[in-house]
Length: 244
Image 1 (tube, rainbow, N blue to C red):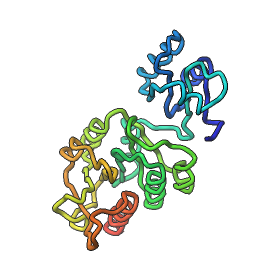
Image 2: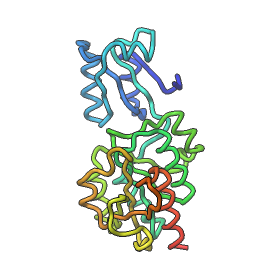
Image 3: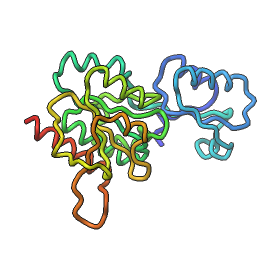
Image 4: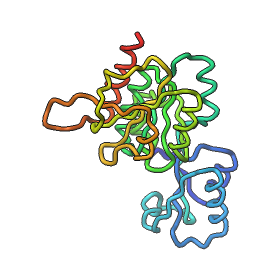
């Protein structure tokens, strides 16, 4: 654990929130009766900061000091707003590429995806508030530092994100081994967003329903799917191949 990104106690966390620090998540004691903690929870809900209610044993594992029933992790990354970012990107680039990650909680997969995204000049990565990988030291290391070179948006609702992108005529493609069409048959010559899901849960059904097309990679062996970071890399290089 990087101690510089970890804070505990009511006043330090309240100060961090009021100073608009980027907070990854907050752990709160389940049975807390502290009025200041209740105030923090209300602030977190207003600012869409993830709060997890945990037993005292969890907090004691995080720190052996007086945590007052609350601990928090600051994010090493400054998150962007997709609503503000999209028009800025479209002003400067004709055919941007966006990545949307659904249910991808594995830190190393996230880091590897970010590395491939940066190498392929992806314009932004969008992740949900919940069920997303922690942007911690392992993510930074696996990304080879790429995590600091590409805008990351952490949004409450990925459905809303897709709807925003569609308003700008950005075509939405989802990757799924159950698709009927191969990635090589798609036309990536326009602004696009690629959606990838975890190997365990896949892409949320409502995201699939809002996709313009669902695409797959050919699988010739006995294992029926690729690691998501590998699949993402193949998709991105097909985009670049077509455009170049």
